[in-house]
Length: 264
Ligand code: ADE
Image (cartoon, rainbow, N blue to C red; front, side, top):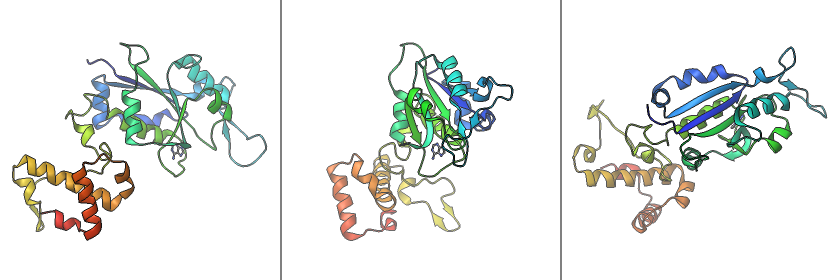
């Protein structure tokens, strides 16, 4: 068993939605190998009233319900300490927008205590949101996975767990796997092909069958650039590009080079 690198401490009203996704593929393997651990805490278990109530009407009126502070504080402080000894991230559409770079920071950020696994608290909001005092006095960070509103933070927490886990050394079979991912270099990934070489008359680009690793690497980089320029030109401003690559982009802009031109 390898040393655990990261423990996710998830606070939710619906722990049952996590297991099916955590039990497949890369996440399951990472957990079995002890590289990451996901601990699920049901906030309802920390409600002390007879009916285990976790939400209430908003002060000032209006629709919807608000998550009560007491069970959330109780669950988090019993698990992470009072005050919490690790970051506690609230998943909310009001948070900073989640990116591959933030995933990397959360995966590889500084050790709290050398030799001990790092812990990351994830708090899933539901209903209209959480009582503001949770935000002000318990949560250390707020993350949104996109500019749309989900029914709760659970899917967002799974997205964060997935993207962060991919950064943990040893999780992906290929040590450079995470570096190749779309967005890791600030660019979108190049196109992928597998067998057969011709399918319904559509051919795999000849360069990929050439065995010439230098040519293949250059082709892939150009494809990444072209694809990013076409689909997400906003990313090119921040991407780390060589002078030659910047020139290539300018040439494409001038000539309107089509992606098909570059496939051969
Ligand atoms: N909860 C509801 N919507 C969300 C979003 N877009 N990101 C993170 N958490 C959420």
